[in-house]
Image (cartoon, rainbow, N blue to C red; front, side):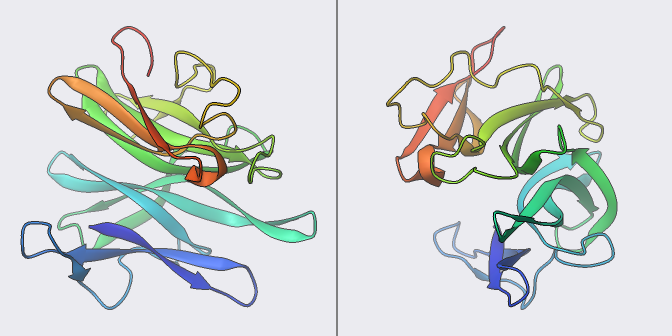
Length: 218
């Protein structure tokens, strides 16, 4: 199980890294596998990283993960910027990072692209993620997280679908996701494809799901 470790810092509000835990009873319980992170600050990650999603391509493990590129002072407070990069591994423990970007910022005003979730389908790879603005994105802010999409033929080179919505209909007033959609997780079961995601206020209003419809969007 791959997870985020969260550290409070003195110079900036926080610092994230990716760790791994292991279960030896079929997933009932987990314990930390290694004393330190498997993906963290280094030559290609001067700030922090997190929200890793794993896949398997051409006999190798691939991780699409959130990568911080810097901090900006907004309304007197430091705010991080991050997009999605990818790393490769033979064993899921030792990862090769080369700085390659999977999904970049759509504009200079975008503050975050995070939580990739990927499916391989007949026409290639499909990715869902959440993205936000650099300011006023908390609570009911105007730039709160929304779900975005990207596609790839090989799982390596991605095209962000900035003009296509992730949902067939926008959220309605008083819906649990009226102000925010974030942290998606997509999976297939019994021939259907589902997306689970957090609603407004980073999920304080609840967690919902939608079903992928062939020929349209979730």
